[in-house]
Length: 429
Image 1 (tube, rainbow, N blue to C red):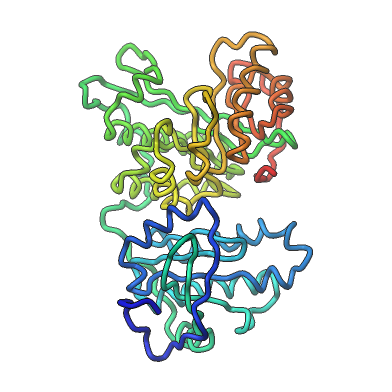
Image 2: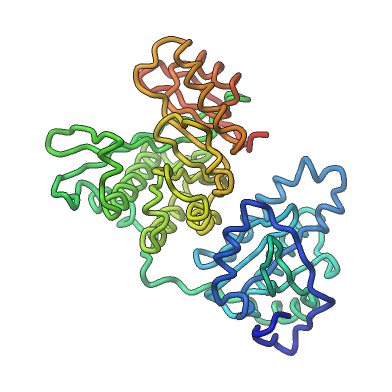
């Protein structure tokens, strides 16, 4: 154990020497944030291993590992709440940090989550398969930990179930007032103009199957009383507090629309637009978690967080901000305001699984659209797995986009609608 770390309780033994597990590249910068905190010395960081599932599944692991990840993530979200943090750092390891609970309670949560996953996929949770480590160091791209005695930890966990993390007094409950549109819009911006936020739900399809994966919240910000839309440049010039208000108004309006238009039926998924300024603010992030909780009740498969205004954001800052919201999301994508020039290598280690972009107005004919789709996908596909094109002209252009490597699209709302079958979200190959 590292010098300076607090001693472990005497009734939980550590077995063997420290073990090192190589972390994935996009997780390393997030781990630096944990390393800089006091969580390691307090024993509040654990490593949950799924090696037993991989070994028992054998050749089936490749086909089923995404399902295993999703089940593990769901179990961790449910047990950790808004005050815990988890991140998959290797093919079989989840790192879990729980600042709001004590050392033993946090380790018990990890054990119970692991037992749930093992039971679901293997039919039982044998103690020999319950591999939980206490993380003692993060150095040089590796997480080092010491394995806990699962039998002793299980006995204590079963005798005294881990308490739920305390609720934050600063974060309101996801009640009717949270999604009340009048609470957020219209409002007076810091520069004195009155703004109103409008939000429409736009179906998004997976181009491989042409199945609808869910809806994106397509928003516009209107200057009052003229109802004139703000341009992208004008939006970027707004103060951070105004951007937060726009984000919250969008989410409130979108959730209300979803409830009205689907008559209580849950959507497959939702793509939620969030400004980077809001995501990087502790105050804004606290409110976002409540909106995300409310949104989760309206979807079948999960949420996709779409981070806007990402141009010029350092990858380390993007990764640190998105890591804190990741437990609430299936995927996190970055929204581009314009066709990238010179590639997107700056997003390689930013923790994004995809990028999205709206088709520019005035794209006339297939030739212009092909040039647009080719430029976007050529820049994006070496860096991210998913490319979402919003507002394509019709089904023909959607097919063209797929040929160039786009994975998802929405049809421009001004064009005739086509009928979609609701489909499961699939992470692109």
